[in-house]
Image 1 (cartoon, helix red, strand yellow):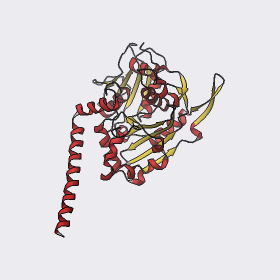
Image 2 (cartoon, one colour):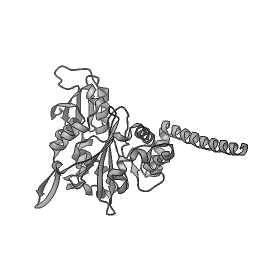
Image 3 (cartoon, one colour):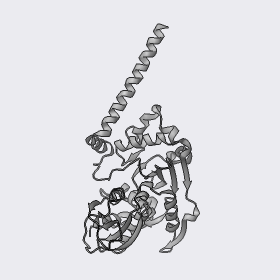
Length: 351
């Protein structure tokens, strides 16, 4: 009995040390940004400054693009995963990747499923950049990051069983798979520090709070372009869906009124930006041209102390927040001055 007890104690001590070491490493990674950058460069093969890092804040709505690729490098599954902090709920929304749309970076009109392969024969922009920005613009949906996964991992049953499959101390190592540490089938722009926060939140969400929705035929319509039949997104229908499913409680509480100003002189840019802002859950009160038409970097001008909305807009547009004192006659609490950087992202042109 004594021998068995000693063996049991040794086993417990061993597992305790393993878990303690694991959490010590995780804590180190969570708090040292240079290590995050090192992992990003060493494992993903690019500097985090080239591809914008994914974001996760457990107090606000977070939307992630999940997708898989065929052997021909075509996107064959497209799912938007969204976390609702107020309801403590995760929704998976399956979208048909065969939508015909205007691809980002000036790659013309084509199937959304082909966007990733457009970057196969060039250094910049990369395929993921083209696809990611094309999805954000087509859906008019604020995105916080992406995960490139195996096709089977995006099946309905696998997604609904994500908590059981991924969480728990016995499955803690699987977080490394999400970061591509142990496999070749996963890619993400979400840094390791944010991955562990996502993992922690998935653990906390109840199993019955994971939901799956597949967009039906009412969200698509057939059209012709140059004599060919194509399927396009019913944007008004989809935007109504976004407002009911993707609302952000934190942004809604600030109740910001936003003006969109085109600072490039390029037609239609403010209108495209306004859809993204509106789908964030804020009221767009004006869409017009700015006084200047050569603004380089998109500006988020906060006149009435709306820090959470300003920060969210700055992330979405990769812009810079400027705080100003309130001015008479301003209809908006925040003014977004769209710059040439946003134009370049959509058109691929510098000027």
